Length: 308
Length: 319
Image (cartoon, rainbow over the protein chains, first blue to last red):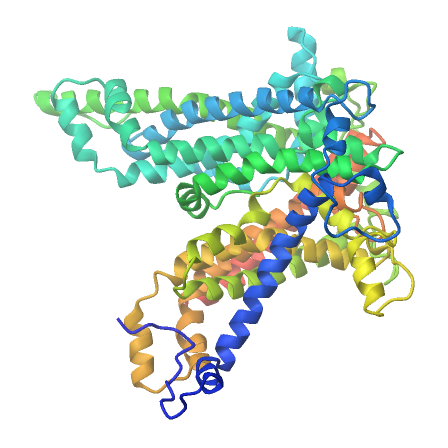
């Protein structure tokens, strides 16, 4: 198949020396794309390099007159301060735990609920399906800040009746994250379920398997890649979320990582290396998860037009 | 629902109907939890915020919000006359104009950069898979880490990387407070947004690029078309629909975006957009009515853009 590329170079056989060879290989389009590529890679990777390298700098290195481009060694000073129970910005372990306590239940519940819903959307016929789907899609339109005021007022009202606090309540956060992630999760899974041939399920139904049995024994095992990407996607949203956590959490002991990092940054004493250490800890699991499951996730990102 | 008469003698039809009804009941049972959570926590609050925007709601009556006094259009008038909202000449744009400039220019540049990146990654080369994964890093990394790294790179002290580089190369004499300079701050916030969100545009465009029928390019080759001509007459028309969809999605999300600007500048120095203003009214001044009114103005503007966009742009695309 001829390559539909914009850089088709005609080989110049008349020049055999090295420079001639290079001159034949290098063409303006090739040169331009190499240049662009270098530009993209450096501007993408430099901030990440800066984050990780700054986290290993000592206080002297970070506070000097000129930036230190390469830290003198893998100093763990910033990480020690981050986990130091006596430091005003310490006890980060607790924040990691809080983030996990929010992200893992969000992800698990979202997978279960969206599986059930997506199966209904993809396989079953029912009245009102289109209205329901369009209503759920409206979520794409609503800004988080628009929802937070009524949500706050509504939950305060319900909380006063049922006797729970809206603020400093991690389950409240889980429920709000579910509301923002379920629509996309539902879409991603429903799109995937449609690609599974329904004949297999019908065969199982004829053999006397119940609907739930069909979902459990046939659809789910075939949909594992999609389930994994929904789990990771919802986990990442809950792990990264900032606004709702900022409004709903007041107690330092319940801060999730993003709010804690914000608090460290806004502390009167600047500690850029500690901020960068905390950011590194927060970023690495996400990037590793993403790299390990990139194939699945890319499909999910394009299929659902994941909100971000 | 009444009405449709069933032939009584046809037991097959009745049986089919009951199976049908059972299927619908099952479907509702399966989707109900999702529907309750989404409608209860998104659709209902969204409607509820219209109601709040006409009431005087503060911290004192938050627990008794349904009794909040009705104030008519007062909240809206207060927002419109607020100095943080209204346009007062080029020195002080106000949140509405800033929001529009921020989201339109940010989205346009994001889509263009995403297109360039997609074209770069469209050709097969060694380690393309890895390069594509790396290109997605800014989009998957947590916004908090990303924002604080950029703040640290743009640090106003001479020890900030950008200040150091610019001063060494002699482009500036004294260190600059990049994110605390009117105009420059907005520009940088837009560029950081481009940095963060171009991978999304890239992914969507790349998926479409790889689905273009190669025979189209072969035909163009036969006709002797150069690469620019091929891009203009083959690639772009094939991408038009996705370009439009990506632009619309990103425009909506950028218009609604809170975290990025809040973390980068706190909404100061000419970067106060409507979501930030909403947050400040509600959670700094604790005037929830005014906050809700600002959010409703935001939503109305968003709807206007969407309708104009769908009418003008999408119709042209279809033709």
